[in-house]
Image (tube, rainbow, N blue to C red):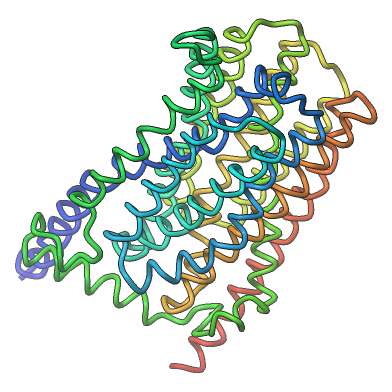
Length: 444
């Protein structure tokens, strides 16, 4: 009898292991590579600025504004893009996003003035809007919640990995200055924009909208995955069914956006400005790119470790809050010394915090929402955070740095945001647990 009662559990566990192995290896590597290319195309303006700013006569404030226009467009189009994906499916919408941003990224090589840079940078944000929240939404269609933090962390390792690879690569491309009569920064945008177009074509053949459409899963595996995801959808959520307008007014959406803003701001601001910060130590372009890669390499490893820790312990609040406090600590440490080795160490601490936060946070955020609210809700959180981080903070950094000459003072607003976000996630998480507990008691 003992053997008989044990067999069904063992069989179910075997189906689960094999199903998740197939799902992860089928979709995750492709999504990681695609997001890596996305981050390179979004952030390579930082390395391009080492030549481009002088050619176009850009001040630091003008460069900061040009960089931030990407996030203005991203804010405007992110929610509509995710709603469109929910309607037409990821198999059609994600390739559309990838091909369009690749083409626009290559067009960055055509800018000849400040105005044209502003226009193309805005168009890049509009073209790419919805890719990240679209993938997070897509993962909720395929990945059960107990796997989600490590999967999202693995997916988002593309961010630091993109800078780890992209910074030296961009530095190397800049040394090709004059090849075929083009400036190094022209070549940078052309060479790094092309892969998005090619991957967008491949996406059509790899992605499927839902598990029941996957020919590479057996009938048993499809049934297990669909039933597991459906049972999770039926559980009580902190944010239930809401219209898009109700979601945009929901205080928890704004609180979650505040929580995410600190890490988003740190990652974006450092990506845009760290090449110029390191260049101020009188380094050449290639050395700047190589040294800029070090913090991202460390963050790439540790964010996966942190995501696994969050899943193993099934703990999200403190795994999110501690990373935000780590970013703030890095900012304050910058007031002690600004030598080159210490600067690299501080950038490493801040980026480890910024990227390790993402897996636990997005697992937490997606778990707080009803499936019907997830498309607009996840996009709204990212859009608001990117608007503040990519527009307000990037511009604030440029203005403070230009007026004071201090990179350290320019980072100070990041510390305030991260401390506020860390406190908010602890308070909100506690309230959310109490809300769900009360709902379950009423149900039973």
